[in-house]
Image (cartoon, rainbow, N blue to C red):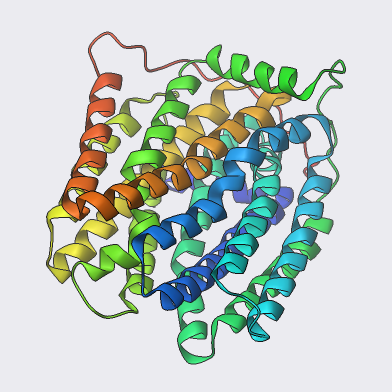
Length: 417
């Protein structure tokens, strides 16, 4: 195989990156163990009520909307490694508490919602620092590889997490899935302790209020085109194009009465997502541009419309797989664009914007979709979301729009020994 096609593996040469990558993959895997357990418990308690599942997803991901920006400020002003350690400790505490409550029969739906919010809060605290450490762990020449491998880890977790969680839930129970979430968090905590301290910390900034620091991150993103457009693409994708993932149990119910189909569809989405990321990895490298993700967003909008119309099981598998491939190809490309053009002293805040636009707006989109689904039905609800995604993609791709910029050089900050 030519060297060009192996280039996407180059970040693995660096030991700090391999450790940070492992922690990232474990974080994502643990998230799926908890998320699937919550969805399973709530779906069984409410007979897969679309509105209640939307509220659950809202509780699970709302912290990304509330916590991401302050977490990004912390990532730019404090030891990123220490922040991840604190977050992983919180994950261990929350998982143990939730599993105990479920085991004792003290977890009705409102309690599950509260536990889901706590899980989301811990992950939201960790995400900006972990993503910034990913960029800090490699030289600038390997940054593209680092971002692609980060997305591959996310999708391997998306495939393996639901599959393993599904086996545990179906043959043992949701408590075992939540306990596994705690064990995964403990392993990630141990690995992070062996990540070398940051050799060059972010420069000390003048003392500012939290709002001023967040505002500085917003201005920095706007001043580094096409980072702002990439963030907008991520926001529209999360709010409209992939909001259907919050309704996966009810989407499955459109084509089958099998209650376990949504677990299969979740894994199928993960397989498609991994394929999408690998296609991005094997593409020839180029300067940061939002043209490819905007074109993919248009295709994803068409898939969402198809999910509303379709009632065939085999076509459902295909649409969900293609949707997964498109959404993570979009997210990977936008992540790479942003990481290439921002300065490291603002990286945590800008990546917190990325996290907020993706995970923070997804529960909002899921809740809106759940309400429209409840009152208007799946066809109208999904068709409206798909058309909005198509329209925004067309606006980004309009003739004369600025969609590229030369990448900025970023130093590696973690020791490479």
